[in-house]
Length: 178
Image (tube, rainbow, N blue to C red; front, side, top):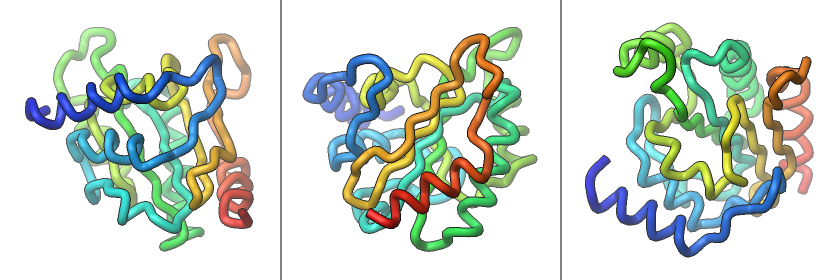
């Protein structure tokens, strides 16, 4: 990440308090700008203007995470269903795990999935801004006004490992209904 972008992300992190517990924050312009400072791995860059007036899904994932694979499929289906009313931003986090330390595994995952939405790297830089993401998958759904509508965290030992398409679609409908 270029030094100026990293400094911008760190500055935002200092200015915004981390949310306590699992409480979802609002998707405000400072959080969007922090996302916009992350490197784009696939799709379009993120900006306040691009997300304005849309329901927004921010999904934290890693390519080695088994529940992240079907969740990516569900997010792609949601993007196809809701079209221009929805912006999805997938944020890669905790990618270095196990014997893999480079980007080969992540790049192969993205080549296989070909997501129809933005995918950003270096998510650790913004994790604290989104209720302190420490587990994946973590998915947040926001209304067009930035209000949080859904906050899913795959908890250790939980039988529910990711959001189903139906759960994602229901949250997006709630977000769009205001």
